[in-house]
Length: 557
Image (cartoon, rainbow, N blue to C red; front, side, top):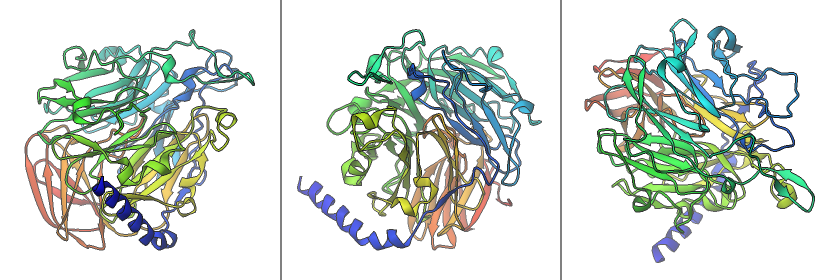
């Protein structure tokens, strides 16, 4: 108790010391959607009937589908629900990045799915050098093979994709280190349009959306990649089945550093799931005993978005989960054995996040000082929340928390983050260096509204170094590869991972902040295959292409 109190005092002291820094230092994001010609408006297809499906929103993917060294965009879209009468054709959209201008090539590329889409995941499924696309839907999912010529082929039937449930976030990862990316899809609840109970404020007869408690959770799905575009549904034999959650977010990581990828699933209102991999693709659910299933009070929270990263600089992957208002977001620190402690209060996240409903999120080094910060996209679920709680609103601001260089955080003032602080009904969010300048940008999919293309203003505040890895013995995207950077005696650890956030797929490159240092003393790369590569004295402010055969070269953008 004394130690906890001492840490709280220290956090407050550090916060006070940094007030002047916050006021002087901005982390300005500009919404350049209009300037760059990116026009996407999400439509949930709903009416005043308030179908529950409308609340979830949709995701977005950042990926270089045409291998021209810049990131392109794929948006998931809703679909008309009973009573919807707009003169619009709703379909998912692919935008090609043409030197900072965005061209809608959906029709040409053949990826305009008109299902009720939720999330997406991007990865090189067949290791042929181009990025394929998986889309989760309310109903059967869709799988697009990248043909390498700017077009995609729907191979859903060929592959045998069969997930009739309410699919949400998708993670691509190699569960058995065979060099092939497998597919994990979170499924939400048992819900049908025909069974849509009335919820809302009875005294005013204002109808609103129901809570997840009204619906039963369902099992997630795990597909094993057999190669040659053949997949086996191994949900029943892998330890995944039997655990009926209400899955919204998922991220794979080697949490216990035993050489294989584990899984963490954020569930809505029920215990989160933590699957420990035995190295052969069999998973044991162990959230209760490892401390990652509930908050520190033993209560299940309404988990939505999730991300991992080394928050306190000890070399182990920690977990950050966004939750419902009144719960706060949650920080689970890895205690170096793959077990976790809820350190939300100590991290300074509890109070600032209590009034918000968090969805998309990312642990990113916004100021390139070598410490991970937090970006959270917020937006309430209840349309009439202001009628119930006066100080709450449906549209909410986004939040940025800066790391105090000790694993505790302070919220950056809204006026210091530019358009990132604007209010919206935020949902899916993908993060990456869209303009290739060494800092992280964001694309936000807002529920039933226009997307935000948030580009960092100016040059990066501090020096940086980035890596684009290509596996040979490992999966070609190098997902699961651990990269350890040594700068001025300090180690940073990051993992190649496109999953995380909420309904999204992120830039697969790893980007490190280097503060004022001009060289990386050493970079050590631990490939999933077991190979280890070491590189010394790399110049800052460059991206490097690294292949699993030891080749390394700077990338020119």
